[in-house]
Image (cartoon, rainbow, N blue to C red):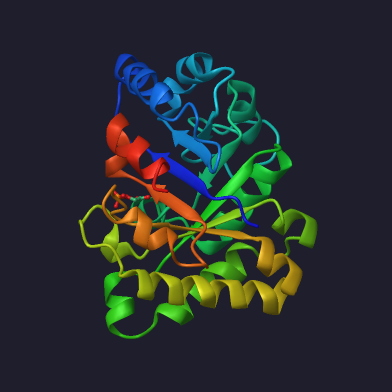
Length: 251
Ligand code: PGA
């Protein structure tokens, strides 16, 4: 059985005081929710304070990004995997479509960041997903296929078994237009097939593939009813404690 994972990506929202309020509101609403791993990804600036407030709880944290370099060095403005680990993070989001679109992250960078995350003992949440024009031109399998193969290229089976994949069709991010559960499920099945081809059936059965893009309290259950959807990467709706708690408690 693949344990579901629900991740809240706060993006560039929440000052420290607001971040604290959000987790204080969230904690009691998910205190008995052990059916899923619960993860929040605050901005870097709030991670330490949020982690202190979450100590001993069932909510873990993720960085939203990390440096592609291993170890430490002269990389002004960058945050290493070890630094995130030091702050108390267990996960890190890698290759979000906003990073790909606005900060020119290529599959090669995604691959390096995935390795850097694993090297630091973090669970990478590797994001893939086609853009609207690519879907309209029926290119989604080509694009996502390349993102999966190149982004995860060279990972050993052991390494692959540690990662999470998030499929996020760009047309659904922040737009209120979720992919239909059928469309999402088809792509999840396709991704699972690619993992089987490249890393074998056992790993493809075990790997968890999250869906992202306008996930809300009112659509989470139908998405989670699909057998190939193992969780959600939630943006906008994770900024409100009650909405996010409802998504976590979709059952
Ligand atoms: P959204 O964002 O839920 O606001 O669509 C999802 C994401 O960007 O991960």
